[in-house]
Image 1 (cartoon, chains in turn brown, green):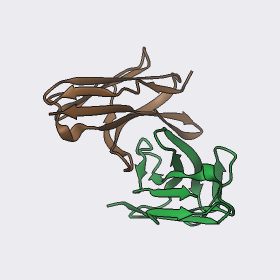
Image 2: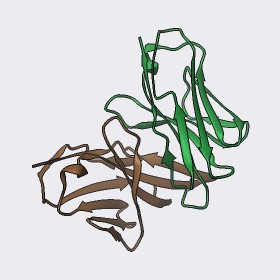
Image 3: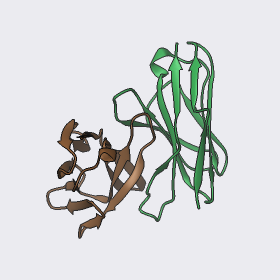
Length: 111
Length: 113
């Protein structure tokens, strides 16, 4: 089983749609969680951290379920510019920090 | 604010030639530094990380090596490139205590021919 698993997609949605990405992690001792966005042929960029109580940043909502070891990202009112690959990232505290990146979920938003 | 610079951005190298990619971080002290590789259409693979000058940990056996001659400088090298070394190489930094959030440089596209 992979340490961090994501549905690779692609997700093809029309502008204005709501889309949700899911991610599961295997290590129950994982301590911090993030979503990154990666555009084609570019570096990954931090989209948002994921807090235990859930957090929102504009059209983006992230949620964490520690009991189920599950993280989600919800994008409301999708824009063409949201087209990208979304990476789920988990930090495990193992003497230092070990950062595990999911393989990413590809999103295409169409007009 | 912190910035990370990585170069060169693109390079095409023949098989058997050497490689040197360089990365520097500004605006922070004693960062954790990383080299990742991303093959076409694949996820990120951690190659090396460093918690301090001269301290390098390798995650996978390979044709590559890393060095950290200064606190904010990280270098990825190879003596003889293989075709399989082609990919997108990303330098990154983090500071422990800030949830170890990782920030990436703009990346270097390497094509070995």
